[in-house]
Image (cartoon, rainbow, N blue to C red):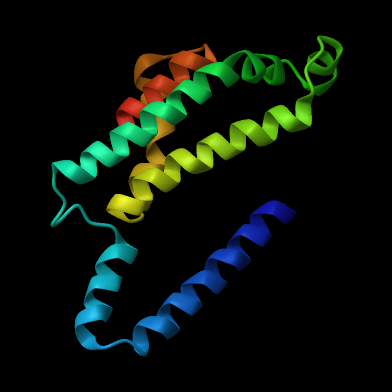
Length: 144
C-alpha cells in the first residue's frame, strides 16, 4: 500500500513539474514536449527502431541470464534463500533490467500508458504461458 501511495505521489509531482516547465516554454517547444509526454510514434523512423531493438537485445540477454533467479523467487523468499539464491540482489537486478527495458522504449516513443498497462496480462492471457521465460516473451511480443 505504501509503495502505491509513494508511486502516486511521485507521479503527481512529476506531472506538476512537467506542467510547470511546459507553461514556461515557447509555444513550439511546448508542443513538442506535450507530444513526447503523451506518447507518439509520429516523426519516428527506422533509426529509432534500430536503437530500441539494439538496446533491447542486450537487455533481453541480461533478462535471460536472470530467468533462473526469477523462477526461484517465484517459489518464495525462504525456499529461494534455502536453494542458495541471494534474493534481494536478484530482485534488484530483475527490477533494474525491467526498468531499463521500459526506459529504452519510452525514450523513443514517449509513454504510452495503455500499452504498458495491458501488454503483460494480454500476452499471458492469450498464450496461457506459465513459465517465466514464456510469460516475459508473451508480454514483450504483445507490447510490441
